[in-house]
Amino acid sequence: MRRALSVASTRPSAEDVPVGAVIYGPTGIELAVGANEREVDGDPTAHAEILALRRAAQVAGTWRLDGCTLVVTLEPCTMCAGALVLARMETLVFGAWEPKTGAVGSLWDVVRDRRLNHRPEVYAGVLEEECSALMRSFFRGPL
Image (cartoon, rainbow, N blue to C red; front, side, top):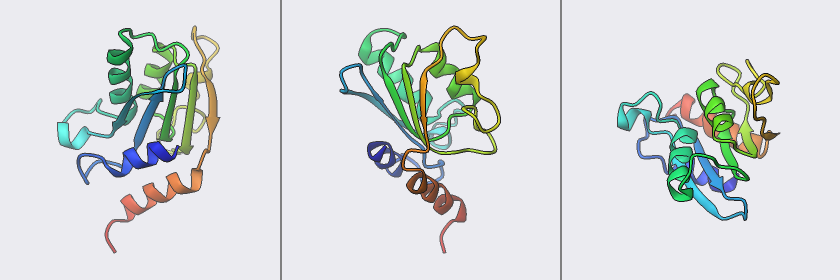
């Protein structure tokens, strides 16, 4: 999670919400990272998780990310939760809960929906205070 926090703090634009994502392969090797780039790219799908998934699939040479772990500083939204399920991600680790848009237990629980063909293992609240503090600082703005 500390790596994901580092990625979040080095996002391309200070206007983007500071979310960082890291994908590790089955052997623990870092495959890809992503930070929010919605503002800088003008792309509503440029969430940290989606960018990391795209980059990891390129590195792996397949869209199936079996055995991989996604570590992200904020609970994924419905789009990102759905994408990580479709990518067959084995494990999801996230830091801060997202009560407004979270889809891994806050508003919805996409990743544990029994109707889907894949359900990753989930570890929530890892370094939650540090991840939450980053979000609070961003939305509070300059003092």
